Image (cartoon, rainbow, N blue to C red; front, top):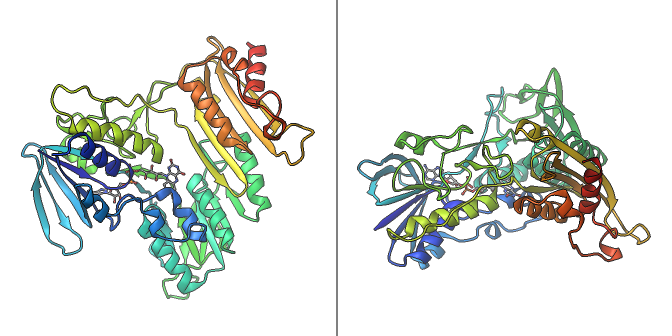
Length: 453
Ligand code: FAD
């Protein structure tokens, strides 16, 4: 029995490893278009500044290491077509240019997502890059070594753009960040976004929101090297541009093979990570799942989620007929990032999303300290908690400042357990003066909402 896995980063490699554990006899082949497998893409922004020093540290497992585990990992192999009726893959060895055609019994599609590159004028100039793959970071670092840029522009104020901005400032570059939406971190509410923007200004990043990028120019030098970015009639110097204008799921292969695509544009799978094609599973940034609070199909392209989905898909793809499959229940959309000294995180629904999902949201905002008021060294903790007016059920939270990780993880656990604000008020959380106020900001926010209810 042969399992073919297409895509070898988070979901694909986790799936292949699980499949190997479930069935030691299975023939497993992993096709990966890029030259490396198991890349920690989340570490790429930190590679730019040198915070993460070695390239190899961002590769969790090499093709040779997969080989030792009995998984044949073929890098620089792009699968171009799936003929699921014949159960045959065709593609190209990108190193030799040779085409290949191989059969499979079961197929797992983990083709992930790609960076969007809007058709900006001058996108083809040297010095303009996306940041998705390890090879993108290689190219950016080579450009920095060769051209020693003093000024950079970041297109897009999502979490990747913000992480990149921080790391370019750490390198000593002057950074201009341009965002077309009304504020950075569009996945967050305006209070959190306002705090991020204030923090960026303190750190010297020139932020322009509500501004559409027109393009990039070589400043008339004719040498094909980027020198500036222009947006809404303005121009800022930039000898390096990183475009973080969003990502999209890579679904073409699955779609052409006949797998159903969901309303979010990603591949539709059931809880067992099965696509609509029998014998074909999918996992990672290329699939949609359901939101555990709102219930609607949602697309949550995140590394931890890709691993969890990969575990379920890989296990199920290796099971014998009649074995009990694993299930992936859905997501809360929990995420976190850091921009300079500010942690930013969210889980569940924002107040506006909750209203759209049919709830009657009520919220409370708490600004507390990360230690007891009298204990030195405390920093600001911001938390906004959202609950449903009718049931008291906690629907979501967003947080920034110190302890964002702790706040979001408490709230995510509450959402997972479908707790109400009444449950949260009596939650037995840890307390001592160096770690926070006597009552956690989560309990404070739940108490305020309970009063409103
Ligand atoms: P991908 O990582 O997209 O991998 C899919 C692979 O499949 C790619 O290498 C692609 O080349 C290959 N492929 C596609 N089509 C084919 C084909 N036809 N044939 C062969 N190979 C193919 N997530 C977090 O949770 N936290 C973070 O802090 C975080 N930070 C991030 C920072 C950056 C800069 C980036 C880019 C991403 C970050 N992420 C983060 C997201 C996380 O990296 C992704 O969610 C995760 O990598 C998804 O894994 P995946 O296996 O589904 O897909």
